Structure formats: structure tokens, C-alpha cells
Length: 292
Image (cartoon, rainbow, N blue to C red; front, side):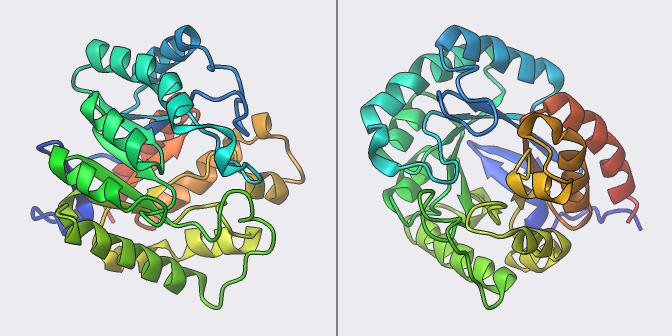
């Protein structure tokens, strides 16, 4: 059955005065790591010139959003190894140049630090992608509110340093929903409209292989939150384990399978390293989804 003419809240996302109807197209968020130690492409785009070239390539490949991260949050990473000032030194030239070159492109900054979020929003970022879902820096919500920005709240059990040590849940989907619902309440209490919030179940962040599979299979449960759902399974470790131990750079087919399954179960934003492959696969999946 074709989608209704009246989008439910889970199909709408307001960002900087723009109202996106996510029934029309799954948004593709391209990852741009500005760190020397990312699990996927550590160091390849660490200098500003390389980062800008790659950012432009992501746009040409079809990215709707570019997500800039200047501090690695891979499993085992330690919080205090990169100061807020160093994070901003890495971010500022790339963010400001991309903002100038692509004035209508949505730019996201992957940070959980309030000071970095405020600087990024002042410099033109449209979205803050917070892996701590306001647990580390609740003031991020008020910064987003004052700019009318989008806020992506991600679930994570523990911290990047400890999250994969021994993740345990009684009911993984219910616990993810409860934490994200609490974060949404924090955001709205700070003045950010719920329409500006999207959520991410945090594939690979404090989850076992089985937890990740359960999330992807039961993603429709999270649609009860009535917010857009972002899924980022790109090249993650559980895909390597499911495919016989494939290394990071050989997980593209597995990534596409996970993301296509996520879209059919309710995801409306896909966070990926390979934008070209995502664009091509999403064109097909969106056509099918719109007939469901």
C-alpha cells in the first residue's frame, strides 16, 4: 500500500527551518572522519585538504548529510586523549569550508562535548550527532534549540572505553527505547522541539553480535517513539564476525545488507562510509518501501 499523504511524526525531521519528509527518500549520511585513529579509515582524511577532497567526493556520490567527527569513539578509545580545543582545531577548517562550498548541504558534527557543539552550530552545522544522548553534556540540547538545529540521539551502554567489555541487557530493544525516550525528554525540557530530534539505536556501541541482530530485526519497535531512526552499521565488527572474519575493508556487501534490512524495518537515515554504494542500494529499497 502506498504511503499516506499525511506523514506521521516518524517520517518528519525539522532541521534549521527545513522540514524533511522522510517518506520520499531515505537520507544518506556520509561519514567524514578527521581523526588519525578511526576504526574504518584511520588517518586517511586527517589533514584538512584530504578531508575536503573526500567531503566533496561524498557530496558528488549523493550524500544528503556529511557527518564530521574529530574524535574517535571506536571501541576502546579513551575520553581524555583529545581535548575540546584539539577537536575544534580539526573540525573548524573543514566545517567552515564545506559550509561555504555547499550552502544547502546538511552538515552534522559528531560530538558529545557541549563546547564543541556550540562552536560547530555557530559555524553553520545543522545537526549535532551525540553518541551519549545528552548524558555527557545535556547543554547540547539548549545549544540545538537556540539554533533550531537537528539533534541525533544515540544509545550507548557504558563508554567507548568500556562498552564492548561485557554488554548485558534483559531486553535490548526496550532498554534502548527507554534511554532514548529519557534523552528526548531532556531535549524538549531544554526547549528543543521533538520534531528536531532523531534517534539511533547505536549498532555496535555496547552490543554483542546477537544484540545487533536483534535490533535490526526488531527495529519497528523503536518506531513507537515516533521519531526518525538512523542506523549506522557501516563496516562494523559484528558484520565481520557474521561473514567469517572479514576485515574492515571487505565488509561492503554486509553493510548494504544490514542497511537495506534496516530501511525495510523502519530506518529513515543511513550512516555510511560508502555513499555511492548506499545511494544505489537505497534507490531500490526506497522504491520497494513506498509500496509497502
